[in-house]
Length: 553
Image 1 (tube, rainbow, N blue to C red):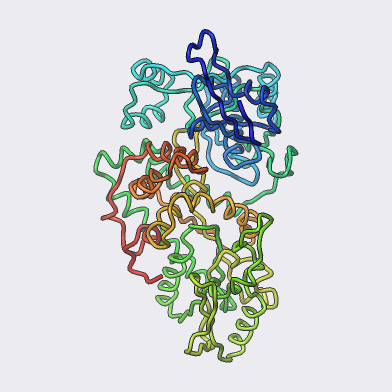
Image 2: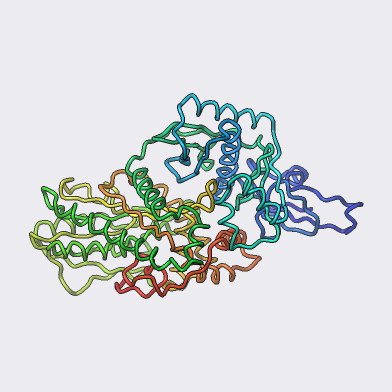
């Protein structure tokens, strides 16, 4: 066995396992003395699996550490399972629904009633007791018919719906202290690996907090994010009304041919929200001269900006649009990150002085020459036509740094209206396994990059880590400063994106370092029934990624 950093190659010269017994990943890590600080899972021959998986043949292993994105997701899912087990033991008559992220944690709602701080403390104590016992987390594979019978006994219609069209012959579950649950990510091998977490009473539910392992093991102080939380809350209210809180319920819509009405209602809701934003801008005591739109990658900012422009025109205004992308510094002046790659996510990649100079001139009624950035050559030129702003006009500015205070610092606050756009996913796989917003945006980006930018899924997956790191610094810290948060997620979108995304992900070679990520996303998408794009309106935000939009980009 040879080891190179986090990678292990295992060779079995003797195929008789009685002579050469199988060995677990954890045993291999110890035997090879790998410099792994906090292992979370392993990729064995390209497939993501638990650390207690037995290696029985020639294999190449990559160790997933907690400090990685996948490692943090695995830790999060494991602690959520721990929470579900403790909650079930303390309150067997109540039901909990794991919902969405909030600051450095996940919000969980109790269906029947809210819990007191004392009751939450008892769940926390139960979780700590389970950790101290070092209970194993076992992967259990059973016949589908037997599992279905258990689900019915436990009234787990959410799981029955999820697997109804998935049609497995065998069902893989995870078991802890006698309680079984479905998780699509592999979990940690035992409870002793889950020592850092915290429970807080928040609103009418509970927040389960985790460390940011890229920064260390310390739990951060919880920050109230009321605007973001209320946006999630509104979305979940709509999911209740439409009875579509899980992927199984979405699949039921598709199979029962009710999907067309769902698409119409979902898109109408989007349009109504865009119109409300336009009304709020128009009714301000001082008409905002700058409408600043920001949000993370693949959130649909561009289409939202174009739809908002239409609604502002309906209100009698004459908006003009400026893209921050045209203010990128030329490639030779673009800053680099710690790995030596161009850091396009940084505010330092934008020519901020030129941008501010242009804004101030426009607000004074002066003419400017707008820049135009060529992404292929990494160079900038100026458009021949001049731009001037009239007294009754406003400027729509869209880009990931749109609401960063540094971008428009010299402009008076009363003249600015800030909008944060993100795809705040509304669906769960089932009541305890949520769909992260970052995965929805990543799948959007894979499809868009393939359709319009000539990038393969391998390239998009490789770049995603840098994109996420940039968002943590340049986007997420400013979301609560927005006047309005717009949720661009659509209940049905992953079923539409599924076909194109799967084709791209299947092209990722087994030898590629992103193969395990591609396989994870393929497994995730396998739960969704496919949906044709014919019924998606031409003005939908989804068209920004799949094509066929009535807007020009």
